[in-house]
Length: 210
Image (cartoon, rainbow, N blue to C red; front, side, top):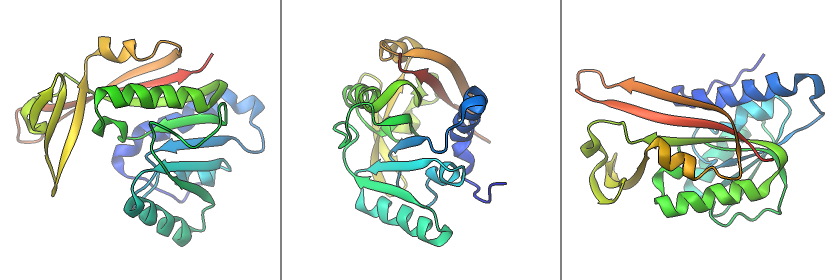
């Protein structure tokens, strides 16, 4: 039984792990190879895959976030390979991974850059491999909570102590980015803001590379 418990917003990653086990339970190999795009932070989601025996790789552009993730892995004696790098230009060969995912990482990029990240995820994934993607839906309200709209669907505002970009997508926009993939599942998650007149909405896709 796993001893690692991720943050509450990691529900989609738990779902991805469950999807993998359900789909491949009859042919589970000694070690699958998985990549997390935007893998740094205090509690790296790769931890639950490492406990399951996956060969785990993560990429992040922030030295500070990578240091936090490495410290966590040292504390829990987890074998995870972290690389500093840009998701838009990943330092990995074509068809290197069985699975790839991102967890609330690319939503802080421009729509043009998000499209490039998805192309890179497709490139490094093996044929038949699975991918998990998440998008902030344009059904979020009020949009002003994300800051000022500087380009269509791209909002720039303060998050904590930092100015941060959030890109919001319609379902039509997300699906236009998924040409070349087979969509295996699509989920919409909506959470309501307590004591506020508003909601957060996200779209999650489980994809397969043909």
